[in-house]
Amino acid sequence: MSSEETYNLFAMGKKLAKKNEHLKAVMLFEKAKKLEPEKGSIREALAYSYYKCGLYSSAKDNFFKAVSIDAANDYAHYGLGLCLLKEGKIKKALGHLKIAMAMKPDNLFYSKAVKKYSSIFKE
Image 1 (spheres, rainbow, N blue to C red):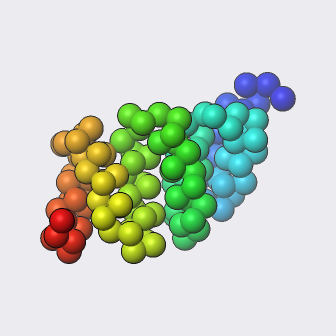
Image 2 (cartoon, rainbow, N blue to C red):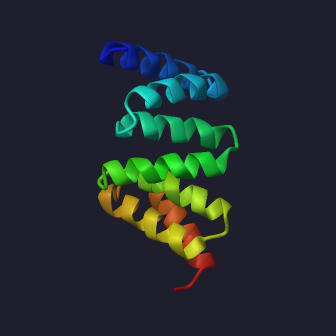
């Protein structure tokens, strides 16, 4: 399969995710991931759809991989932080949420999450 095939799978997955058809999107993103396992955008999209399906462990694994591929991926840090919160790992989650907020200080989702969980967990 070609990179064109990977792109088509990714694009179709994004369209499904936009329509909140995340389980179907996961299937396409998984196929794309098999073709290009080191592509951060695929890992991020896959993680997001896993998260929306309530499959937080799979989401965490893929957000972690996206961060490993590109440490400057603010959204992957944010997603990883949310997944760690689901596991009750607040201190570790806050680290990733703060990284995301530092990269994009104007992002209200990032700053609200940091504020909310910082008040719960005093370092």
